[in-house]
Length: 195
Length: 170
Image (cartoon, rainbow over all chains, first blue to last red; front, side, top):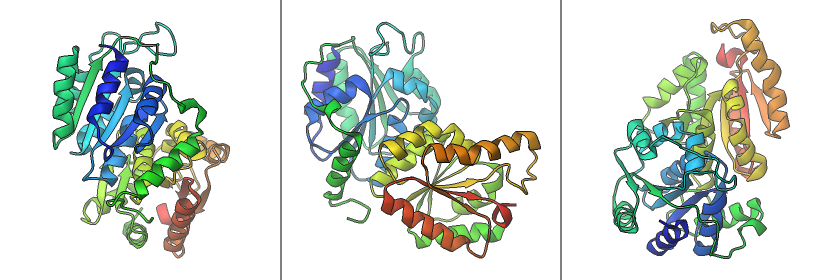
């Protein structure tokens, strides 16, 4: 599967009410370009995307939260699988785009012989899947986004360095990105904090 | 930590409307965590690593939920990279209570030479990360110190750490 095609489909299936959290690099750039100003926190450093998304999901228990992670990011903080399995927010969906390599580092492999979905299952996440075709991916994604339970999807994608979506992600300051996200959250009717 | 400081901390957390308690269990704060787990006011999340604990607490905090991460100073060292990102990089108010392992009075069974490393490195580490912190060692002022630290944390968009020691902890 093409990474960009998978990201595009995810963007098409998610409405403006959903909160999205991304890891660094390719996911952040493509998601920023596609997802525009909808509420999203872009570019969390290695290993921090999934636990951060769990925290956001606990703050907004009635709103869908999607963690958009990568294989390199996930494997640097695998203990987050244990925490996510334990907390299992019913409103959280995790999608890991697994291209098998650190995308900024040529052919340096990431998970190598490790099956990420099996690892997540071993950590105690009840619903995991590895998706290798667009048909499988779309079916599982639609089901996960509609489910009232935590689901963990691994989409096996090809390296896709073309970045077909132009965006201004790297031109934005991270403080500015964060403030935009917070401002968007504060406009939501179920925001739990002080406005 | 005995029952009284645990009670004072719980009262202060409730006064600050902090209802999400995130922790990686550590010996000196076990009684606090057990009391929190027994109190239906709190949602208690036990994390599997300090990096993840910092990130989870940050995610909740940025989304408007009042949360605290309870760990030890060794945990702050372990979670230092996450703390750097959530603090100086993003400016997210992660509120932290950390047992000050290795401070004078720590008789918790780990060798003194090992504990001393935490004491020697802990505060300079927080200073290097530019994480505001304060030492809380008196029961008499504990509740006010927690309230003040949390106010500073959430109004400055920066993490803040209280290092628990003295008669609060030992």
